[in-house]
Length: 230
Image (cartoon, rainbow, N blue to C red; front, side):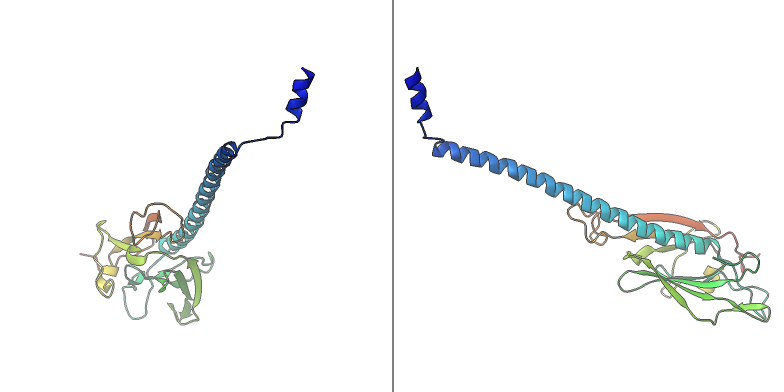
């Protein structure tokens, strides 16, 4: 028995080449599986963070537009019984209104607000504060601009709805004066494409992978609808 133990202790043959190859293959498979797991986790985390960021941008744009549009109002002008419509100009991707947004409750004054989209899809807000000229407000002061975020897909940012709750067809140069006098609400659709997400399936090539889309129909309760009397 002692002799056998001595022989076993002197046996230094170790693992065979075939056994070593098998161990290496099993280790490679395990490492590949673990690596794939961590790569997938990284992709999911990146996509989730990007989606949250884009949602916040879309919400910021929508909140600002809602606030301005909801407080829009007609603007009285000298020499005319009918005031100017609240909507100064309107296309599918740009809008200018008279609004009492962020005004003083004790001395309310209108502001001329424009929403526009630049060539890169970034939404900007331009404001001109109204100043009294006699008994009427004019808008000749300096313009202040603010970047609201993006990039968005501006093709159908604004849809204009009349008093009959029907969408109004937008002409090549925007809404006419007659049309602007009949608008009672505005539907806003903020679509932010995902141009940086890894993986995913693009539902629309123009919108990228899993775009963020916010939709809101905003009433204009302060309007005096002119040109609609029978």
